[in-house]
Length: 385
View 1 (spheres, rainbow, N blue to C red):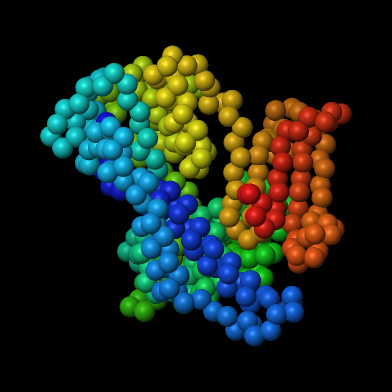
View 2 (cartoon, helix red, strand yellow):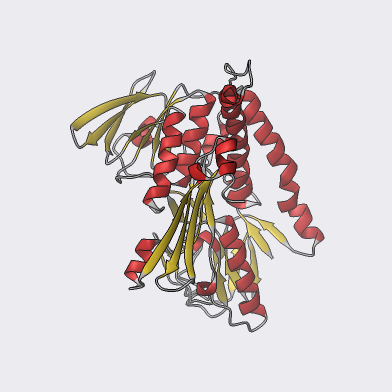
């Protein structure tokens, strides 16, 4: 039985990978057209994005992909699909739509939602997140982006390329705080080239609204500043969906910030119930959720002993250039007491990159005195591929 309260396909199809990558593709096309003069192409300097056409293309392609995750497809595979709110009523029972289902095994895969900061005046002023931003029909003239993680940076660069005046506000000293500092430097230079403005080491004190604009009052190292915008996009992280499911009745331990508590085999504190994806993992990626779902199938139904900690988790941030990473960072190795050696290659010194007009960086982290690779980071166009 598959129970869904909103839209099948979850974040990836509706609010994540699919719509965001459609926008990124259009943004890259307009940026390439504007920069084609350096390659000897004439007449494309004034290229601009038709925001309505961009959003229309995204929605059309999303609808084209949607049948892969449809109720009809899953029912054709022999799965009972229930649309409604699910709630555990005991250690082996769950209710949905007035029906009670008894299970031998269950998996909690409710994902996460955009986190909202408790900034005075923000809710009253109204803001966008990675869900409702894809419902826009007009391009915001001025856009403030709160947070410079993957969601914030990807969408900030897109909207700047579409023609918005974009300012990214980040409390940390660098963008993409979880990434390698050298890698993040390449990205921030590229985003500044796209006219994205940054306010680092900056926090939002409060938000004020008038009929025609929203004003952010910022706390910076040099004092208080005011920033007037038309829209605010919040991209500060994700919160696990653990509320309202009766997890206490099922004997499943959870935390509002970290999600459902699981073992290395993804079993919860109820031996019948497992969990996978954003609701229980620090790796909030579609491919991570997919890998964890496969582990749940093996461990829950086939007496497997597969451990999630054995996964080597690659990921990519789809800015331009992209950052692709796998394994340990230098700081991770230091925390584990591992001595390391780093091989670094700047793509600006690589013939093919020079001819393509590209720049970037490859860093390979080795265990010192050996050729054992502990991790790697690549900054380049199509790094994820």
